[in-house]
Image (cartoon, rainbow, N blue to C red; front, top):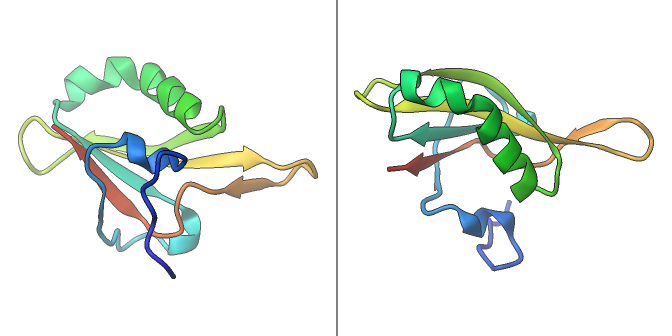
Length: 107
């Protein structure tokens, strides 16, 4: 599989840092993305819907589904695992954010 290209047309170019890491309990086909935010879980949870709405707008109003939100191992860090899916014309849903799980760290 070729690497992701970061061009102005690619939605990933909006993130400061993108790095790839394996999440053992998921498969590439799941399209799961893990985002690590430099805030505690208590600070992030009240903004969960804003987070979903903002990411949905970035990805063309596709549905953003948060599968897990939990405190990271490091203090003042929150892990959010999510995927983005789009409903096709035939009614089927397709996860399309990534074929490989990756982590994005916001500090």
